[in-house]
Image (cartoon, rainbow, N blue to C red; front, top):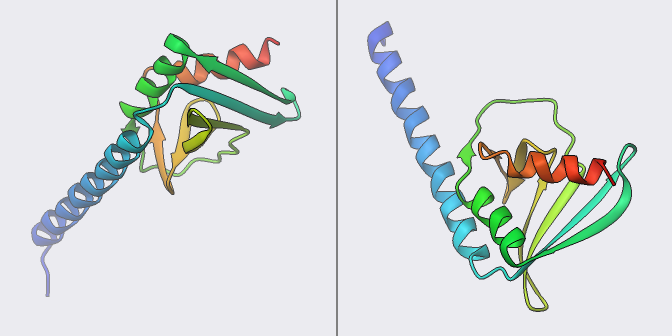
Length: 128
């Protein structure tokens, strides 16, 4: 039989290992999109309407940095991502995320943009 202290240690080690795996997934995704030269933001929302926005130069790099430096978020939230952000190099899509402005999903994992770049991007779309 496992006592409480052993159970806690095992649970903490499991959470640590899972966090490391999720962080490694983001590193892998960040490397995949590192060569981005432009970003296309697509949205389809009852409040935003339907459309797209292209970002180039420093604007694209700002979004790229925000995604690449985000944090794993293990919590479960009611979340309905209505914005798709695609990372492009020339005519090739390197990867994409779906976001609600705060949280985003990349390659099946959930992350939080603590820089607030994605949130500001969604507010910019809402003001159009």
